Structures are given as C-alpha cells and as structure tokens.
Length: 240
Image (cartoon, rainbow, N blue to C red; front, side):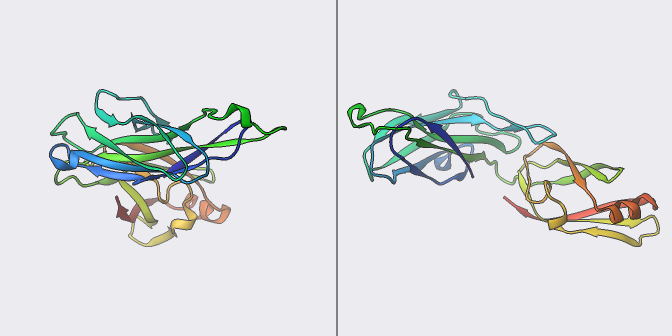
C-alpha cells in the first residue's frame, strides 16, 4: 500500500479509508468483477475519485502509471461522502479474458479538494490534508507462478550490482532474501542476510520485469570479495 499526502490551503482536516488495498482478479468469471469500500472517517463532507492505471516498473525501480479506462469499468468513479458515510465501488475487468501472464495495475482512490462550506473558513493559515491511496489489482491467470533468476552480478568498488529477472508469470516479493557467495571450489566466502540488503529485500518483482539493484557493502566484505573469484546464490520466501 502507498498513501500519498497532498497539502492544500486552508480548511479543516478530512480523511477516508479504502479497502481492500490489494486484490487478485480472475481474467474472466465472477472474480473479474469486485467491490472496494470507501469510508469517510472524519467529521466533514469529502469528495473522492477512483481510477485504475497501469503499473510498469523499469530496471531502476521507477514506476509509471497511465490511465486505462478502456480496461476497467469503475462505478461510481466519483462520489461525495457525508461524515461517517461508506460507499461501495464496483471495479470490473474488461480486458483480455486469457492473458499469458499476470497483469499488474494500480487502483487509486484520491480525495478531491472541494470547498463545500466556503462561509465557514477559519481565519489564518490553515492546512487541509488530503489522502491518495494507491492499491494493487492483479489480473491473475490460473496456474501463474514466479520464477526469479539472477541474470548477472558485478562488484564495483564497495558496491555489489545484482541484475534479477522474474521470468515467471506472477509477481513476487523478495521477502527474507539472503545472498550467498561461494568460491569456485564451493566454499562459502560470504553471506548477506535481509537487513544487509536494503533496497532489495522485500522488493516487488512483477511478472516479466528485470531489476538492477545496487547494494553498498562494508569495506571488509568488499575486500573479501575482491580477493576471490566467486559465484552467487540466493533464496527468499515468495510472497504474493
């Protein structure tokens, strides 16, 4: 889940909840048509907009989102909620009923900065905080599974560069990742556990994605690897 905070001036603080924040869809059948729920958790009236975008991640981890109204039916896509009111939003997949691999999208619920009571504005520099939820929708074909491989590795000074690819048909999180360095004789030179792999541990590898990770090693670890010829192994707990 990603929650992005946007600031506007002035008025009071409003907020809402949105769930589920992640959902697996079937490409066809009943599970291709699902409900999400929005609840206004504050004391004021708010306006909310719901949309779906693509989710593409490049090798450096930068995400691109493009609206795809032709692939999803969202109803209602805009709404006004009174204090404490809840509303269901229906989101239906209208795309390929038989994709070759899992398709990843973002579902976005964002508060629209609307001034409902202009005559009740407070004096001074107030702050209005609005919320933007970015959740996940995965179109999951039957039997899809991840297959993560290490395509290349390189030591550059104190930096270890790992290029990984998910050749499978389903995304996975790299939870509890561990990387092992073995000599050509099969002897263990060095092991890196999850806390020593920031920026790699827990990362989401979408189906078909290639990612380039750079890990800064301690001076001692880098010197140890620089003095040997080694091969790399890794393992992790797949989480979907």
